[in-house]
Image 1 (tube, rainbow, N blue to C red):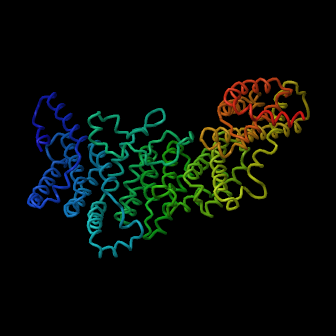
Image 2: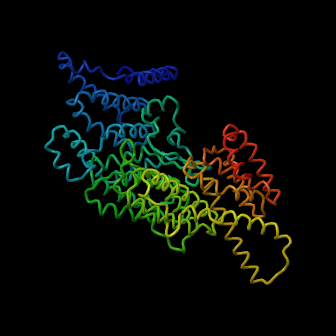
Image 3: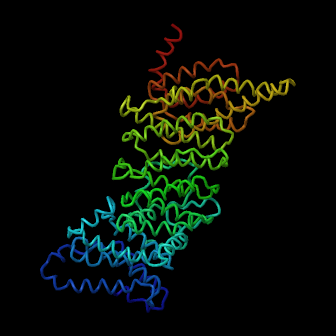
Length: 595
């Protein structure tokens, strides 16, 4: 109270010292001793504690005359005190609802720093248990006294949310936190408010879990959907509010989101994606059918929307929505299957290629979050369906679609392999009547030779019948596009860390990478060089090492000098990395070749 009552000092130096003192207090505050609550002599002090809490709570409102930084300090102390009183249920139950409501109102605060602190506070205070399993269960839980404080909190929060214009104002305020730069808008390391927060302000507004990487649980390596400003802590707020307050929050969000989903401003699209992610991941089952139908309809509109500026945020929304539950992340959310159904629905042929590429990117991030070791039969069938579609479209005319297909194939194929390693026979690697890896690798060497020969003979080509020439050109173009998709698959596999389960496929594509380094198709050659650079530094355990040696020796006498030159470049790195293993592996190979 002494610190909070020091706003009258006019000296800038003095105010700076007070702020530094509060930051130290904030960092080192270890809570109220449990013995204080257990000691019978302290019972008389309980009204004093509650009175102190109410006094600080009053200082946290923006309507008082305090400087905004003191208002921020008061809110921080409020959060520290309620967390310190968790060990005393009697006191905690008295102040939880009031405090949660206070921070909920601060979400639409005019002060950006207060919004940041409110986000941290609500993610800490909201437990979201009464409505998580079923809305009807909340009525039954009235008979349990230990849940009374949670239910009363939900009632108070519902009253606030039902106020006219509250949810719309809240979404609008949160959209202002998303500061989109002119380059790529990436500021994932911290909130957008970091651009107007000083170091001391961050120390006051950030809380301990803001520094922990709780989501995503899987690596983020897909460049097609990188650089977004999706904040999982925002999505968690909406999820917790729905779980704690039930379907009224869902209804309020649906009404407010109609405007934000149709907005062309990226910041409003960002907060809409976060709200949708929380709704999809909340697992509230009361009136689930109508709510999920609305969500799937909006998701389908997002997939088909021609705008691509907010693709990273919506990809993160889908990834958050299908992320597994519990600490291990293996339990599927209730709406995961509906989300996958929506994404597996084919888009009309008349849509722009950017929309098709967006759909494949959304499929990639959704499949990443599926745990192969806990894959359900329905999820296994999704993989088969998706792989069939991807393999059929490898020669697509659009470069961005081919890249998206290559990335999606990497995720789907590695998931299939990992699931098969868990339980052989549970999920076969068959798509249609062919194995996916055979459809991917069969004929790749012959295809690369054909592309190489066509590239060399183009300059010597004589004029021929136009229809025949056009037919050949179309076939050559389709072959080159298919090979580009294969290279995108290789690059994604090697960059993602998933190549360990796809090494047999990668080694089978060794010759195309070597032979297509220099062709008349510059885009294809650039991809071959990128795959080559990644392949050079990939370690090869046995028996893949022997297979690689066989592929190297078979390329030594290749008639094309560019292929032999690329092989020499690869051998420098290969020999350096594998010389101990080579001494063991080379003799059986040589014996097989020469004897």
